[in-house]
Length: 264
Image (cartoon, rainbow, N blue to C red):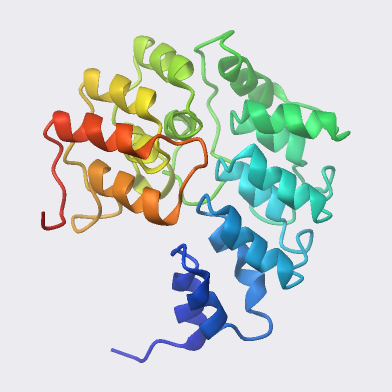
């Protein structure tokens, strides 16, 4: 096995909440890995990158945060750091502006925040369809490829169920399930909606998904990946949503006999 480079070590340190690891491994230029930190809900970790002068527009941080379902608190920090709310994306979904991306990702809080900061964008039919679902006006998802990487291929837009679960939208999740969506539809990084809800401490969504028969033993990523209970435990330590109820989430999963890969 080849040795792990300093860059690789720093990249994986972004997955932990302990910023002393970032301090120990940092080299000038590594701040450009900020978007891997934005894969997690970590306000303290984001501030660490902002304190080191990362160019949030060069890295399209606002787009990345919206696509990963980050909190309004994170988005506000990026805007305060100079993120351009009308910047066209130069990466995955090239040309898309943050407001249109928020609509297409079903991130209603992000959409409202961006509007309040003067964001503008022309919404196409896909954006409008997803926004209608986020507003509770529809359960008809469009046929379209996901605007963010790391999601399953195809155009059925099933990845968005996990996004709504992570965003604590129990109402939308329930409506989509009632409309026939599979409770274990895969989303970002192969997580199920239960994995994503558990990681963000979304206790009401977790309770709903458990009641609807979600797979309690699912292993994200691959056969050695974390179960939903593992996701909740990891999220509490390393990707803690400030409004997440992690003790409650763990309690619901334990009461349902959800397994863990960790020793008791």
